[in-house]
Structure formats: C-alpha cells, structure tokens
Length: 69
Image (cartoon, rainbow, N blue to C red; front, side, top):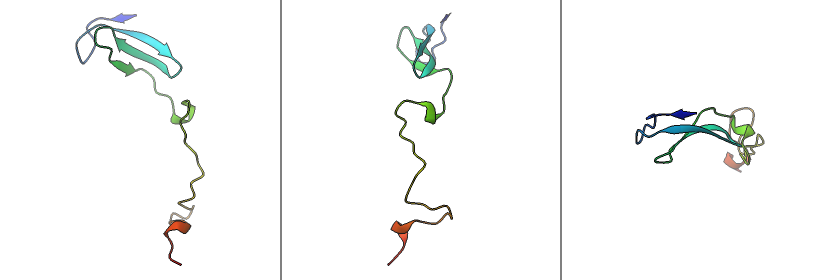
C-alpha cells in the first residue's frame, strides 16, 4: 500500500514494509523509516537485557560496591 505525500521529511510517497523487527513505513524518495508497531525490548534479537544486577539489592540501597570497609 502506498501513502502519497505522507513523508514528514520530504513529502514523498511512503509504503509499508515488514522485516523480523516488525512493520514499518519507508519513504520511496528519501528513505526515511517509521516504525508502525513497537515490540517490547525482551522480544528483540540481541537485546542484552538481564535481570540479575549485582550493583543493587532488593532493599533499594547500594550493593557491596558502595559500602566502606
């Protein structure tokens, strides 16, 4: 599907494309990309988010790195 004169950068024509990260619109004239749907960071390939962080504890204070000897 083509969206005529809908590019916010150059007022060119945009069309919908799809890849592994989701749907997006691409301008035919200037190449501007706009995401149509967002996925949570946990679903992205190689997001690198982990829940085990040693610098903070569950009590809200600093971990072992922040305390004096």
